[in-house]
Length: 174
Image (cartoon, rainbow, N blue to C red; front, side):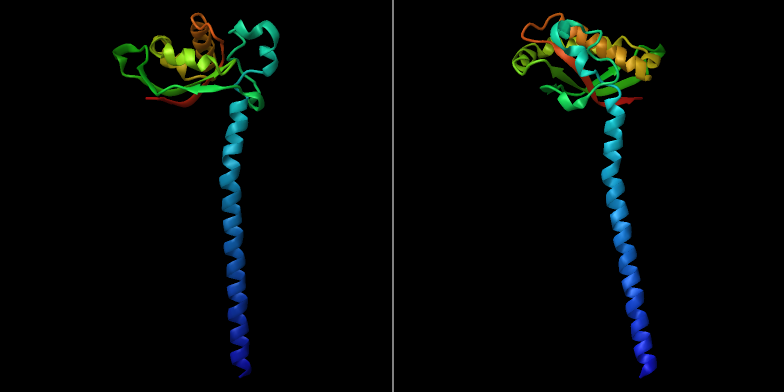
């Protein structure tokens, strides 16, 4: 009888230890699953515009529009465009860029104008992206220059507001 109580208590201790280990593993998994996107967001934040670059009369200054190091705490209205797939400027045309772009607007009224001028907006972006080489699109500095160029060219024909920033939502090179 004493041996039976001893073996039952050993089984209970083992079950409790196994349950604690399972809970620890689940907790660690949950922690790392929720921690991953936060780190990506902090890395992305380093590639956007600082809010003070857009204060006052700087709204038309597109050279500061899509520069690095920004703050996502004050992102304005955003309009997401459909996916772009373009050939990159390369020998043989065998390199592709697939991206989805979102446009941050200075005011929400600009969205109606973008919808109206959507063919011109998409054509302008396709012209810019397809004129770039693999070397230009594969570096952080190159992507920042592309953002600046897109904002500048779009702001040339938009009337109801300006494009404050460009966000690459998807970005894949093949």
